[in-house]
Amino acid sequence: MIQFEKFVLPNGLKVLVHEDKSTPMAVVNVLYDVGSKDEEPHKTGFAHLFEHLMFGGSVNIPVYDEPLQVAGGENNAYTTNDLTNYYCQLPAENIETAFWLESDRMLSLAFGKKSLDTQRKVVSEEFKEHYINKPYGDVWHKLRELIYTVHPYRWMTIGAELSHIENATLDDVKAFFKKHYNPSNAILVVAGNITVEEVKRLTEKWFASIPAGERYIRNLPVEPKQTAARSNTIKANVPLDALYKCWHIYPRTDMRYYTADLITEILGGGGSSRLYQALVKEKQLFSNIECYHLGSTDAGLLTIEGKLVKGIRMEDAEAAINEELIILQKDGISQRELDKVKNKTESMIAFEDMSITNRAASLAMYELMGDADLINKELDRYRAVTADEIKNESNIIFDEKNSNTLYYYSNN
Image (cartoon, rainbow, N blue to C red; front, side, top):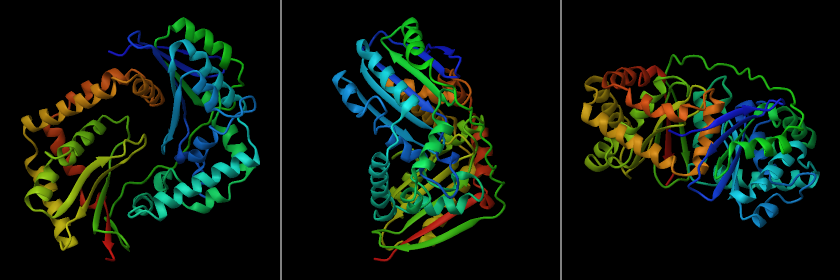
């Protein structure tokens, strides 16, 4: 059991405290309830741009990293379609430095033309390096456009196109900050060698005076049920042909999510998984094959992707995948195989929970989903999944009408 206490400041900031006296360190994690799904379709990439801007200094602290390094700390951040998360780890006795830094940039991030120009250039270079010039870099741009018709998951966190970031103005950025970066849209988690009393005192001191701002009310279009298979074909200068197949699955808070997660383990969880054993080792159709899902908050995707062995026809590779899916749909799985993937999942959860940084981020994410105590309940939800549910959901998910396929051919 991971113990924690929760309180809320009058300005709406939710605060969770997890004491762990076994470490000399502390983690301060600030999650903002904003991801790329909250962007305008013609102004995408802003949530990710902000992740960079938040390290550009605030009105009172020109360089965010310097005071933290003096205090023996380190920090990082990440943006997804659903959230933006900032975290720093430092010796517990220096924890007030982290409170000072995080509260200051929440209150008064420095918006200057120079900072925007610098970070816009950084993000533009990242876009070019990873999504334009890199082999297979455009895969998820193409897939999202194919799969989603109305939901804002149809663009990637980096942005739908480079021009959106290149054309971002100071006014655009200020409006985005005002809308999303305020206490009523944030969750603060403090974990490590601290006490609840100390965290209450520091939170009151550093965050209570920040104006609440307007609570952002999310009203996103719901993706309609897919009623016909979709596909797209690309030819590019890549080393090997590749095949990508995606199916719509459930939101993160749906109980069926856990069944879908275990299905990805059965099919593609490493060297002993079904797809790897059958299509890489035995039939030697693929040099590598994976099955995974994106763990998104709203209804997400289950994906199978593989690089074909040179000389193998795309049609044969796809038929072989479909054959494995039909076996799962018809025959289901044995209790032994189900127990194996459940044990593996349990080990992965236990391993993740060893780090206080991970624990802090998980508590923030579960609180965002509506129940921080999910950190203690999820294992039971995996354990409760039955072999019948695996079989039934395989028949629902892998319906041909629910499929999206990208054939990615090499020019070589």
